[in-house]
Length: 173
Image 1 (spheres, rainbow, N blue to C red):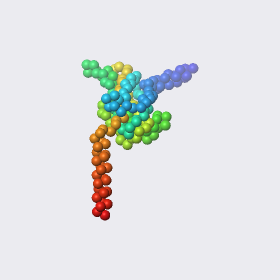
Image 2: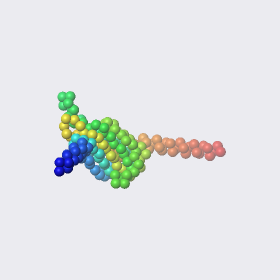
Image 3: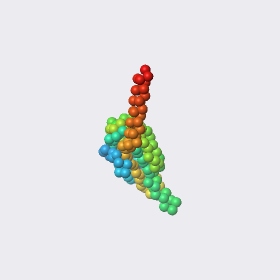
Image 4: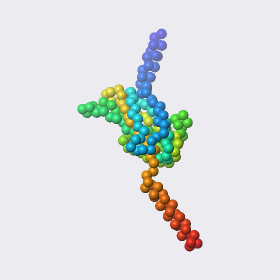
């Protein structure tokens, strides 16, 4: 009986050391194209490690992302903190994952994700909550940017130049 009690105590102590904070699974739906009104969400976690998953659809072949920890510092004491905040963008849904497009740090930087097409994607966000408080939070923002008019103008100019060069070659040849 004493051996069972010791074994149970050891098991409980080990599980408390590796227990993670609550993990979230979010379906963000179709990501907006207006950069002034992106999809944004603030996640609140208990102390420990966490891994959150966000499924979403982009209507355009462009995606801008950002994830930022929200710090609280009172009189030089770090009350809440999320360390090692990082996220990876994947093709497909979390249920049927595709290839990763890159891993980025949650450092208040907006990242343009290259090589995407309109479709379904997901992001996995991970980090570790620490500080004198037992909670920490971070915010994430996503926008499926529509190419600016200048981009279309440059593309049309490039097609026009190619047509001009092809016509000149035909006249010379």
